[in-house]
Image 1 (cartoon, one colour):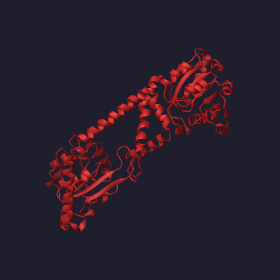
Image 2 (cartoon, rainbow, N blue to C red):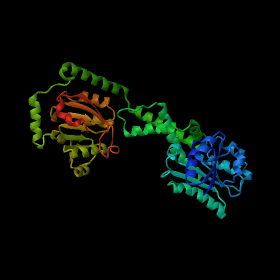
Image 3 (tube, helix red, strand yellow):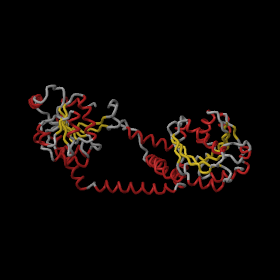
Image 4 (cartoon, helix red, strand yellow):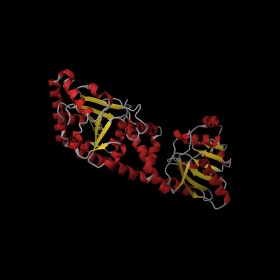
Length: 459
């Protein structure tokens, strides 16, 4: 068992002390702030005077101070009174700065290890298993006592299931800037947006909300220190700013204001005129009973089970294939068309793949399910000979934006087609184990005989 003195008995120091004490190590503590009551509750010896703590001859001194206070704390310690085989370990989140400071201020007889536990107080108070402990043996003596002491200390973390990674302090700082700092930055940016929970949260959005909660739990001083004392953080911040600017230019480069205005204005006009001419059902024309019977008769020529739908998936990439698997499993007949060749994939799934849009339309699908990209949707829609489709074909989109496809369909499609705009709030990853209880948002933009498409409402 080791005698470990923790300097800086804040959240991190207390979290580490609980585990060390639980494992049977002797734990001492000192802090500039008063934490004697907390130490007493944990069964830990607390020293308000650093001189008295050092007189206890701890084998390991663990620095859990803030970055900005480390130098003044080191100056307050009677370092010369420590035995020559004492191991000094820092837990600061920036490493090159702490390494240089320790080598400058510590007597040459003291061993030095720079560590970075890659788990926060919240996760660390439950378990360390699977978390990274990154370290560099900065200065370890050649004698067996010093080497053994260092190994025994690191073994505490390894036995608790930490994934031990030995790399230099400079490499640690580079990794931290690309992971920990960027995570904190994104979390704090999102915090400024005051994101709110919605009833249709995606798994990804909930991950972002969790990120905000996690980063908000750490002090701004810690975040500021990550930026100030890690030279790689400056570069990462510049790269983030540049990436945001580049993305903004890319988005606005595709946003042609005049075309966009014409598209939305003309579509709204079409929809308004449609509602005036057809007030009987929310703007949708009611079709005659004979038309519905004719459609059913035509479909029965292709397959017998009239309770099943014939669905054409337009855009057979990852998302189209993802939807097709479940649709097929439910017994529906699936056709597919895509600009890229997915014939082999479709054949393996039991999907009829058609490389020609005219051939697809001649199959008279009941449902045209658009899984295209947002940018290509209009071009793909224009390529379809819609006059070859049955008059009450249902057009459905699953695009991640809704006003655009709705207005596009209203503008480009004849009035005797139905339009359903949907947004499944899940994808191939979040929906790989089924769609049960996952949000599915939809708008019956222009529907005539609703009962003919009820089976599409619930995935």
